Length: 178
Image (cartoon, rainbow, N blue to C red; front, side, top):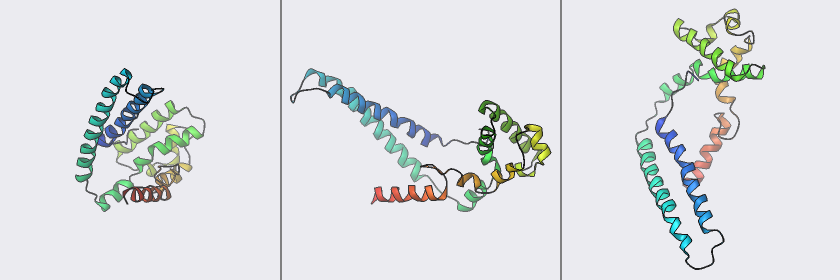
């Protein structure tokens, strides 16, 4: 979506996890049905093992650098979280719920965001008529979607941004570190 800014290091770290898991699966494949002694099959374990270790080592260094360099400015975070453009995906979700194909939703919301940015207005400053000029499916419910924190609280699935989910994730992280 047009409002997104991606955390490159975190995304690259996330992308490395399947590589390590794939090496584990490959090692299981190499070792399946082996008798209890060394066999030539085990020659095939080295590439997977060494690449997994190298990849994980690099990931740990990158994660440490990313976390050591992280600083959080609560006021700036609160201001950023109040930017209605964050809710662009939620507006697309609203349109999808109303039967608009997502490929069309993306274009509708992108145009709406572009108009807001170009005119220096917030999305909630648009009148219902202006919203409907972008799509007949946009109405007063848009203002509910744009209400501050509603887009954060709407993500209630595991790992979501709703406060209850964030607290669960923090609790799990603290338990792992203890």
